[in-house]
Image (tube, rainbow over all chains, first blue to last red; front, side, top):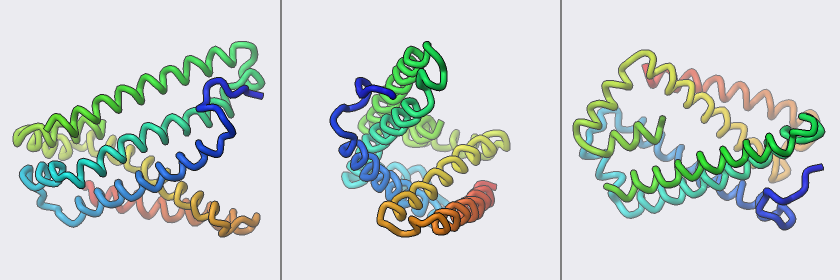
Length: 122
Length: 86
């Protein structure tokens, strides 16, 4: 069994809720963006930039970015604690899991900073 | 890669034109299609999860039907995404 040190702690119900709320945010955002792109095949730079400059789109994009980070963290934690365990990998399991999760956190952090730069650097 | 495309496309007029040119290259199209395929399958399977959370299709038969539906809808969505890109 994997102990709880690398999760957000507590019972897991909060993660369960965060995972589903972030899923709905991401689903709506990407389906919306996809629909916009499908409905404007002759998209110009001016229209594209104007879309991402509106306050509501910035708010939605930041919400989607934060949701993505939380969703990826919980998802990778779930996968790692299910499959990268001492039971499956032997005595090095915990070390491998720790390194894997550290790499995930680093990548998520890079995406977060990069995403904020793109959205607010306009 | 999607972030990179978004970044360039918003950066400047020429960045936007660059992205349009990249997306015209066959290899880039294949890679973007691959990313979209993963995203679409994840999205559709995720929606199935939420539906099952609401207590729909929670029997063994229901789960089998749901899994088949997810695969069928995903294949259709991925093919459509391919048609859209080319």
